[in-house]
Image 1 (tube, rainbow, N blue to C red):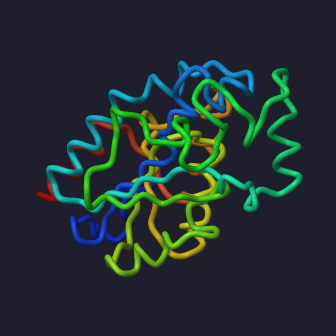
Image 2: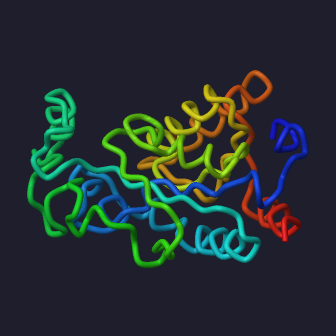
Length: 224
């Protein structure tokens, strides 16, 4: 929905990539950044089995695969004062750079910053480290896509309303045809996930298209 994706029928293993966004311990394990924000991590963990199926399918069909991680330099020189303030504006009072059970929150090189074991990148699957919400801003992600000749992006991960949506909007403005896999994304609250999915579908697919995992697996299998 709201159109058969990709719009030009150009689904191949040459021009289509899977992008797994921010499936990090800081967002998916107790003691990480998201739990310090006061949210239950059940929604972000609930999509792991579906993501494993999607990842295995894309690997079997030889689609290029990219992983992203949100995090900052250890000296926090990439962190703005507003973002630091915002990240600490929660009941725990802890935010980016502060020490938690998984190390300093959202800091590169710390345990919490790493991808969860269930979805860990293989050699040859680029990891894009981003200091903000979108995978294109202040990274080399667009260069990696251009070198590969990628035109279509299958997007999944967390959170639907923040990093996934920001990346999808950035990609759309750059001419990529994006597919959001609804049941392979999650937000801190169900209402935020649902709203984010609905936003994609408006105006004939303003940011791209959406689909369920079963349909995506069927399409990916045809790329073999």
